[in-house]
Amino acid sequence: MTEFATMPTPASRSELESTFFEFARRANEAAQTGDWSDWSDMFTDDAHYVEPTYGDFTGRDAIYDWMSKTMASSPGSEMVAFPVHWHIIDQDQGVVVARFGNRLADPGDGSIHEPWNLAILKWGGDGQWASEEDVYDAGLFARTIASWSTIRDELR
Image 1 (cartoon, helix red, strand yellow):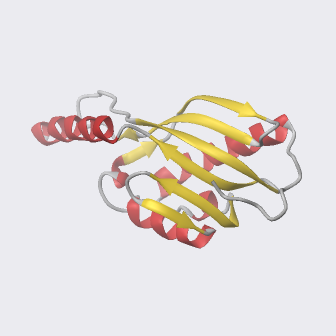
Image 2: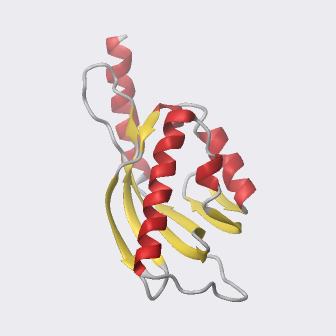
Image 3: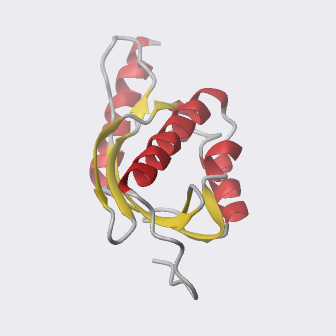
């Protein structure tokens, strides 16, 4: 996680929660529009993003570039929503941990395919995150996408 020369002003619980819900709202909006700029704006200029499959990204611009490219091709482009399954807030540490679904488009039979990940978000001040670290089972993620692909291809 990112170390700060000076820590941001501690956030209230309500500020952490409202920032988190706005972050989730923007992710869902981006899934529909394909424009990840408003979502990326929720990170500080020097934010650090750790993604187990794709690597580490430093800076809002790098996060935006990576997310825009990743979500423009399959399977990212097939993710239509990121529902929040649950979240917890550690106000003292300025951290929100959440389980997000990565809902894939209906393959044609109405079934729901939604691999999930944990996101660890660290407060950066002024309604922004200083870092995000994603944690997930890459094998389960891949199996879920493969199952979804098989059903989609069979129904085409």
